[in-house]
Image 1 (cartoon, helix red, strand yellow):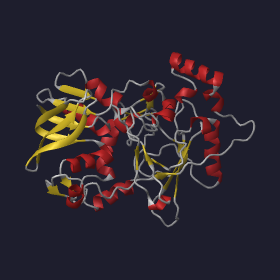
Image 2 (cartoon, one colour):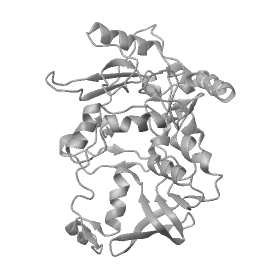
Image 3 (cartoon, rainbow, N blue to C red):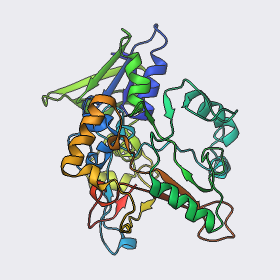
Image 4 (cartoon, rainbow, N blue to C red):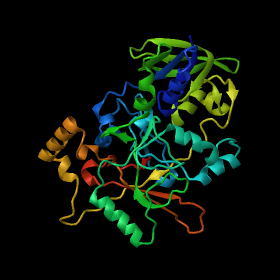
Length: 376
């Protein structure tokens, strides 16, 4: 039994576990289905190219057939590792448009406006370069410039400015627009995941208990009060852990509603369809997911234009691996996307609705060469 029981060791779960365990008077247990984040592919930025294919640290979900995709399924990678999807994503440090947060407030999310959230953005940020009131230093979330910017990235920015777009050096001022270089969750040539920034510094606390390989199956209830969770250990044995104060469900956009429904909290008809006893009829659980489709496109570079491809093939790959292993430098520190741009599909819109990612590694390091669409 613990005071606080946290389900899911992703960005939210790691931060909550670290913050709550700052109080030595309370006990905290963090349950994560995946393994610790020890894989070199997690920490090496170029390892992103393989992370989406590895089932041991990626859930590798697929959508149901989508009418808008002519019946095809979309691929939905999710992190199955300490740090969650923040340990397998493309490492871009990005905030939303201030009008997006205003929409949340208009829909009833009091306290979630840009101005109210900004102090939290600043407090949690570790900004490498920009020094103003919109950014902070020393927090658990790194916001660093790429170690080196590829010439093709510079050419894409130049092309955008020639087309009349603004060149920007900060996409995180509340008004993302124009074209520029993304800042990244990287530090010293390594991925700076939330696991490294938040939970690892807290693991020495005697009141914090971390369990990896813990697959939570359902939340236990007394009436409508959550009292604990039933889970399966790595060896397959059934386990049960109780919470004195709270159960904090941080299993992500997809698995948090799935666990609620598995526990009898969700749309009544859907639960009965799967033989689940209904504890509360909550039609909104598991509904209204809105995601953004990522449409990959590739161009062949003209002869003589520098490319990263040779650095990921043959002897070039050997040299790149040695440079990274010895000095944490070279092509293996290249992020999946350096170039960014924000566009409006309709000039009458009050904010951009299209986001562009430029990937200089090109074909040899493309992470998602699939027949099915990739959903970011």
